[in-house]
Length: 404
Image (tube, rainbow, N blue to C red; front, side, top):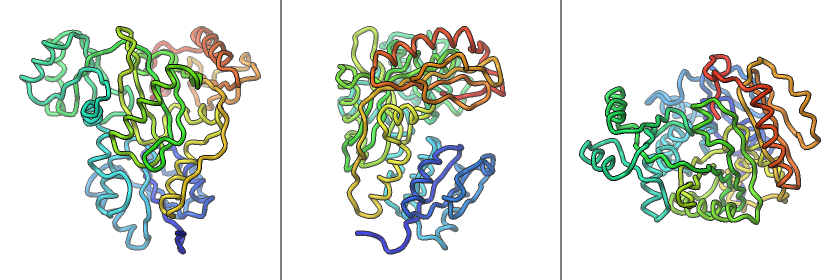
């Protein structure tokens, strides 16, 4: 059934991202309301695609955000609320509950934002996870540390990716860290550090099943890059590989366990060096960061942001969603913090290069080819060259701050 009035999509953006989603909604005739954090309000959003725009000091402060969106609802019949950033997922869920709108609610949102909730839910459905414990009861914490060998990682439950993670090597270090956290310690979990290779599955879901999924392998694990200031790289896996089948299959298990009906996801696994098994790390109900969407599009032609918009609108209209025709090729991405404000990449002139990152104090390239081995060779070669040509070894400079 097709609505007679324009569909209204309210987008929450505490970061400057999601422009292709907004543009696709407008291209399909939807009316977009954008609510942004003040510091990003004057960014070059696609204003021609936005019907209304509102700034707020903070999109996560309650009850302010609920009052503001409820006020907007007096004059706008809102059909869907969409989080454009990982940090907006819980806020969007709370607003959906308040306005009684379809989509992920507050309990389900925990599986995509709370690292403790997602581990508990995965483990309850037989999905392999590294040994972990909540930081609530001290007796249980002591029992965990006695039973599970260190090192461990103390992870914030609600941060994105590797942000805020601390690696600890003995129980004394754990107790000191918890003392420092004080009343904030219950917002963390403790997990065994598992050395291994980290993979990510980027997928589109419709009616509870993946209709598109690709698997990729990071070079250095994101935790090592975020904390050590190394070089970030990732590349798509061959579709007929054992790794591709294992990670996409396990991702489908995660989606079923978490009850996700539709949308776009970014899910990470680690293949442990000690046993070769894949362990679930985390998932997010959003497009992957660090320009991974560009990499997926370069290899397949599938634009994740646009398809996420098409899925949302198909749901509102009561229509079927159909994945567009796409390729099964390969791409790889490499990024590092640069010593120079605008690094010179002119010496990198291979024909497979399809995009260069336009960001100060960053060097980055995207390569694409029908040959997976060619992508691997280029990324491996560039990894060595970037270390020599660009890599900044003090990644805490304010002007070069980044999160991969």
